[in-house]
Image (tube, rainbow, N blue to C red; front, top):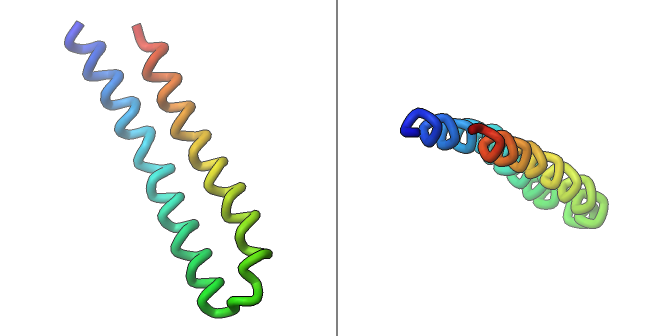
Amino acid sequence: MENVMLAKALAIGIGAIGPGLGIGFIGAKAVEAIGRNPEASGKVLVPMLLACAFAEAIAIYALVIAFSIK
């Protein structure tokens, strides 16, 4: 039982590191791009939101894997 809980915690923890870093980098580069060219904020926003959604999907996959560990 204890090993199962540890496996679930590791699956969620390790699975959230990548998306967390990815969203941080996405946000930083988007803010940098808007800071360099404020008129391009409309063109930067949609791809930034899509990239954030894809990164969040990876975190959700890690959560699903953690729930499926028996």
